[in-house]
Image (tube, rainbow, N blue to C red):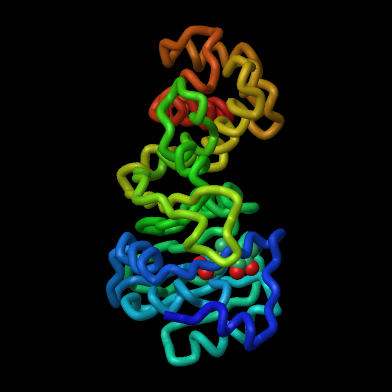
Length: 282
Ligand code: SAM
């Protein structure tokens, strides 16, 4: 286990709040995250935000390869030192939201897993980047803010149900694994944390005809929660669907005209977006 305080002192590192730098110091929690990933030699792990490598080296003990993407240049020398004994770790100094994920995973013959103690300020964009790219990822094991975990796993017609719930559940099956106390980090975050696992199956993925259309329907439906589905999808420039076509789609799905996004199940969103994709072409 990396001695976080020692490394921070040695490199005179001051952690940056705006980059979501809350480093894990609890070996038991790190082990539990790695366990939830169920790693073997066949696995390529993408880790967003390795920090100084506390989780990275645990992952590298079991996985075939770990690609760790860190945005903060000042952490790189420390990270290079802690990961040096592991030849299966590749460090990428970049903003994870800007890297070419296809290029990173291209040619890997086994499974791809995303495992990360996420920087909380970009949790949703990072999860959506992996989902919208429709990469061949088998699962994601993510430490997120507790409220975000509740949104990921939320059921329709609840206050937590929104674009993130539908986006995740359309492509995978989320499970809340365990909660993590602020005491397990340096510095302590002001929020509670939860580890979620999202299993991404081909069975889930193949039901969606067009990922961009699907995610745009979901985004439009929840951008103004009080708006009806007819109004939200017909006002999206990207979808290019007029009100009459939106009405026809709802009628084909046996949904009432006044229905709002939060009332639709994940399956209904998929069917809706598949019809939108079909009507845009014709
Ligand atoms: N994995 C380490 C751990 O668990 O101790 C650090 C986790 S810390 C919550 C989040 C890490 O993500 C920080 O090292 C931060 O610099 C990095 N980070 C923040 N934004 C990032 C981005 N857009 N791309 C890649 N890394 C980022």
